[in-house]
Image (cartoon, rainbow, N blue to C red; front, side, top):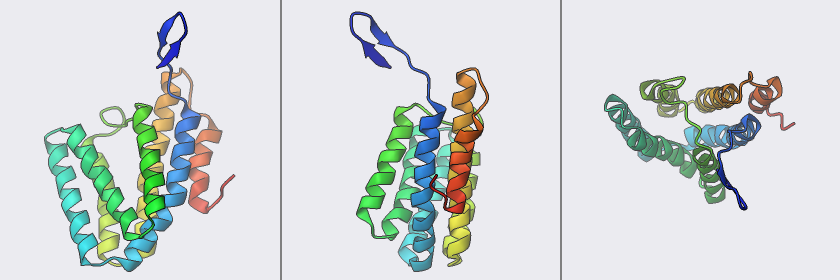
Amino acid sequence: MRFERSRGFRVLRRDPREIAEVFHLRLLLEVPATRRAARDAGPGLARLLREELEAMRAAAAGHDEPRFMRHDRAFHDAILAAGANRRLAEVVAGLRDATVTLGASTVDRSRSLADVAAEHEPILAAVLGGDPDAAAAAMHAHVAHTGELLVSQAAAENGRPAAPADIALIRDAADGSTT
């Protein structure tokens, strides 16, 4: 929404490019952080991730989206905290907040809560297995998939297909490109 002087409020449509930019940044930050967390993971991180994933599954079974999202965020936060870079964790939290502010969600539009929880399973398995590359690849798949779905949804709400450049911005983060 935007306040317009002497007119009231105007509902704004979600901007697919803005969503693509948020997810491009998340990929650039979270994927290497996940690799590092898996490399340095101790039993405490594995236990915490297991607990958060179980809580996500329980929330999904009860179709409790707010509770699910709290545990989803805690799962990602635990991985970021394992990297011992407080500033990185704060930046990613801000990016996640921006997504919430945009009102962007895939739940019940393009996937279920159970589907989202399932995307976290390979991340957990790779962390438990001490496989940094697999953990990074699983985090990339999860975050990129979410970003691409949200960009496509926002574009459809605006009555058009997703711009190839917006999807490419998300996909470029996979190969380390920043352009």
